[in-house]
Image (cartoon, rainbow, N blue to C red; front, top):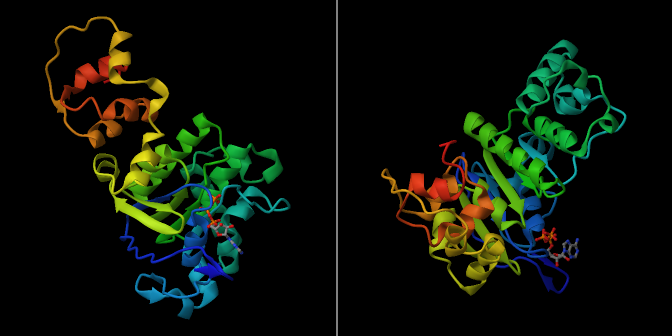
Length: 298
Ligand SMILES: Nc1ncnc2c1ncn2[C@@H]1O[C@H](COP(=O)(O)OP(=O)(O)OP(=O)(O)O)[C@@H](O)[C@H]1O
């Protein structure tokens, strides 16, 4: 992709698998948005081809193409003069769906994103918080039951607590519906938490594609290593962590042997886990959780 003399994306060769949650991560200006917009043909590549389910998007009917995929941006971008129900089902209306059916569907979709009370249906976007609006945007993206959802920094404007909730929501929706998700973020924590696989991009070139574990354990180059290293330091080293805890009784049980296992621990805070991940291999799970102050929850 180039704009005039500016080469924006170079030699991108990427295959995203059906049903996976693929995260494209990279610093600001690296070309993430440009790349994701090629999938729904908001940006047309100067050379090369984008295919969705084997179909060249350049040759697809544009309206059909866009209806076949959800798109969630950083801000919810709801229509201010439409009720939440109408915002959620706007594409269904375009498809000729009856009013009663749309209402039923809106209720179901809003419940799926955690907005269960019926009065949400008749409210207007201004009467919702930013986080609630983003839930509505996700419900809208799910309305046509798309096989593919594109998410461009969809949680980046939310506060950390809300952001985590929305990540959990996405993970559960993905587990339930199995749609393919292409998720763009500049946040490596978010990438590690969400991605089945991660593509790391810098200066318009893909640096590495792999699982979170592969990326952490075998960074392809110094850029990838340093980019993810900056996700780590807040909690210091495992040694610092241990020094801050009481002496622990011996514990038996399964060992944590990989970084991915640590990151997947259900009660584990992502940042904290990341900070200890590279040092905590082969600790008993129970002991690790104890260090995290989470033993009873386990
Ligand atoms: N329409 C355009 N005309 C010229 N240059 C553009 C255009 N759109 C994007 N660019 C340039 O392409 C590069 C990549 O931009 P892009 O928005 O894809 O990056 P990004 O990784 O999504 O960044 P961010 O995380 O800040 O949104 C930037 O240098 C940007 O200035």
